[in-house]
Length: 358
Image (cartoon, rainbow, N blue to C red; front, side):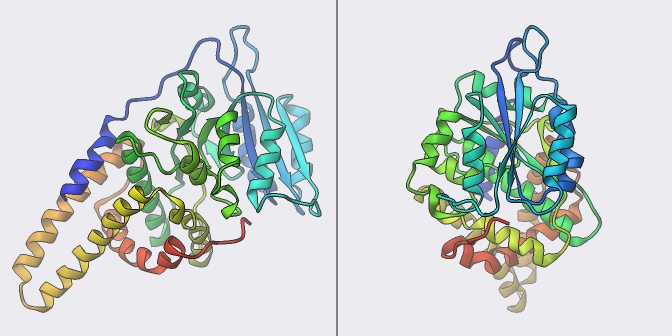
């Protein structure tokens, strides 16, 4: 409880994002797509139509979509949209192309290689910005001299316990990473909503950890580049992205195996702090059970009620701040489910790498 109250209080010190200058520098939005025809058809127009113009009123951004060897209608969709939007620049990678980087890293590198501008905004094909000034506010810290900007990528609400847990776990991960960044120890971002300079990307690309995984470009960039003075976090409700959460447990497990593979490459101080938090979380539930079985139910329930009131009050405040509507029962599902989550995914957090991007 002391850990949570001290460290996570930093989350509430994060200020609202700025609108950016009147005559902003141009931005390259980069999206990697592999068999994403349906998602591109649904989400890409909202990115191409963003309100991000220079003083003359002209669009000050380009959108580069890297078609990474797709076998569906991705190329057809991009060609159709190119006829409607002159700021769309598709880049096609043949399926049999010889690659010098693993997985998504190669596609992302090709996209940024074709980027015309120093400021980059990264997202995924299955993501949709919640407003038309997403680009302006997400890149505002870059105009102020920051090198990396971490944004919020939420999931649409849907019926079922799996969706509830996914949204809670996403909220919880944001809470941790944003609090650490505000405390001067940035370690994580989400590729669904992240801005950086081209120089920062190249610095990360040439780091020792970059080629360790086929994905994980977001966290590995933070590992290689981010520090207390060059990183910003933007959590405003109108500059987030939304995407569909995985609908089945096997699909979710595959996704998390890939995401959690980057954890072992965090800085040692961050790994120790996160590990201590996860351990204390597990022990609070397990020791409560031990006390209940030993007959000390008054002590067990008293401690757990105090703990849950503290945690859930903070989580409620966080959810309100980022616009994620969650009930008390959702916090209970997430809280208890995270115990199972950490044990189930421990091999990927500690040892294994997930070797596939798609």
